[in-house]
Length: 398
Image (tube, rainbow, N blue to C red; front, side, top):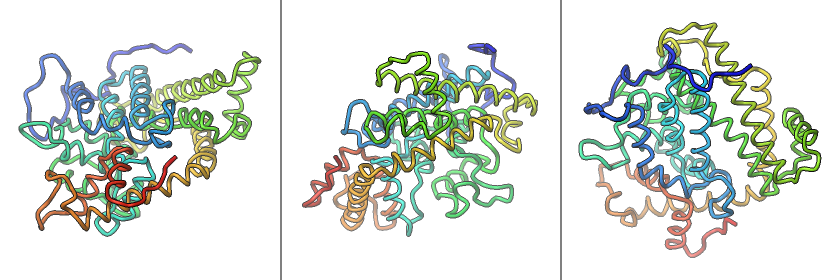
């Protein structure tokens, strides 16, 4: 079956001229939609530029071919636009959400996040999704009339609900926040600008979230193979991947390894994207939504994998966890990265004069959160450099 490469915007899509607006009212642009303006503000932010030198899985200086947080973000944005275009959704909103979804990540990837959360437990913890919202609503200092980027409600909602509704129908923390509670960054902003945290997000936000999963699976397989953390033969333990590899070798029996890896990555992305489109069309047809709010108020997401591809997604992640994320080489780097992040936190919290002047607070300020904000914004190389300046010994992350 062939799908239209582009469709008119569907009734259930997010229309920029029906947006709930911005916290600080602004005149509209004569040349760009509101979601295009959001996208552009994200791209021009300081936090977006820093993604170039932040870890995805490998420390960013390890090799030119491994993904960084920025290259991952660009791959997510491309996939999100492709899916949105096929489903008749607003591509610009989906792209804006994809480009912003990882702005809150610390140096050294999830290792840095875990390390910062551990030392912040007594101060409300640390969560990269909440930090993303904090960056775009407060920490970016670029505009004369407000802090943050003053993004539309629709973009902020999608960022807050990147992993689904964060409150249940009774107003209690749900999903990933069910155990530890709603992060203060989300809670405090929601009091100023109600993001309707107990509903699902827009279809565009749901697309951006699944595009994140698709990109992760494809490029982590690619990076893991290139780094020699596992082999193609080991990957055959994942039935879905085995079928793809068998097809590649059937069509190209003498193909060199580097091209096999690239063909595998392409096929993983293509199969998951096409599956999302077909499955989502079926769910949308069953729901018959007439507006974006019908999507938000549905009992389950309309953007989803089919059961077989959802199982394949779990199987790929189940393979990557022990073979890549917990590989001895990666664990060694994790230990060193944890030491750097936690050492910096303890040193800066005890000696706030070491912070740049603009980051210092008076005695009434939340100094721990301020230090966490500062460290979370660091690139890998800056965190290593600062640790070398403040400590006699710095772990070697190679």
